[in-house]
Amino acid sequence: MTSHETNMTSRRALLGSAVASAAAGLTLGSTAAHAADDEPAGATRTAGERKGPPSRVMTGAEVAAARGWSMLRGSKVAVFSNPTGILPDTTHIVDDLARHDDLEIVAVFGPEHGFRGSAQAGGSEGDTTDPRTGLPVYDAYGASQEKLAEMFTKSGAETMVFDIQDVGARFYTYIWTLYNSMVAAARLGMRYVVLDRPNPIGGRVDGALMTPGYTSGVGLKEIVQQHGMTVGELARFFNGEFLPEEAGRQVDLTVVPMKGWRPDLRAQQFDLPWVPPSPNMPTADTALVYVGTCFFEGTNVSEGRGTTRPFEMIGAPYLDYHWGDRLNELGLPGVVFREAYFVPTFNKYVGETCAGVQVHVTDLHAFEPIRTAVAMLVEAKRYPEFAWREDSWDPERPYWIDKLSGSPRLRTMIDQGASVDEVVGAWAEEVREFDRRRKPYLLYPGRRH
Image (cartoon, rainbow, N blue to C red; front, side, top):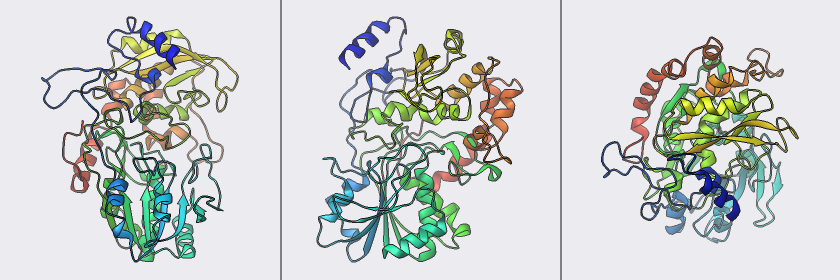
């Protein structure tokens, strides 16, 4: 790590104002400055600058634990969680709950990647018994609402607790585990408790709205790509907007809010340890770019899986240094592109040298991840070898990019030669309407930029 940081320091002169936050591996526990509310208009600070101590944030889990988990007494409790469900000393909440003789914890439910986090993308750990607590663990990944209801009934649970770190992107599956389990709990008349955690990429709203014809496990309902809400706020939104129709009623919902979190904060600016929510989300920097560069899952360009910097390292054997040069010439806000070469160890192009870029965020607030990713796609489309990924298992909707983006619009506009501004402008009204619609469900005051 030390030698790598030294190398990156020597490149800063070439990157101008860019600071290689990605290579330095900033985490939730690191500090990075931002354009604070009291700074002059137009002030710009890079992601790597330091300004004062990190913000102190108490998660919903920490708040609940400080109250002795009193809201869970007198009920049979099950917990939906994964390795991110920790207290400040890194004790997992399930381990802490199991030590309380005045609580009745009956089961644990694991999402994609599993409760203890051992499975890769698209995998889970199966039904098992947790060796540390002796609790039964149910594999809930991919389970339908009906199957979840069956598992909830079998477990004997009366109250469901959800404590999982989200990353702020519609296609990250944990929020749909949240949604489906809320529907199942509502139908059974269960209580549902969400222990809130930060949105690591803040409160900004952006991206296209999901359309009904393209819903899937990476986008079940009509929300925008960068929803700008915490899981607690999303739970309130789901409960008010979608559950009455789908479940026939709202669930008995309690959200335990955080203390100290503001929607203008990014994960690099507060003091919580970063626990990878999934194997390919190793740092807070990954989350910052993921909401945009996950688009490359829907192409024949590697999104960096099989490298140490997934979703930051983007490339393919047929790309070259001209791609990065053209991207830098666009002057996109808050980002620069370093010419990069990598050899993936799994996923696309295993063992092949890929040419491309590493995405370096230079300003946490100016950076627009979705616009950036659209620009990267537009420029990649110049190469004749570029192609959209087609999935034979879904002949009616074969393009994965359509499921990620919410409709065929992104793909068809790029194929037809639309500019970045035209593509991004196509969903501007959807963003405004979604922002208006979500406001009654927000919990935390402050600028959402």
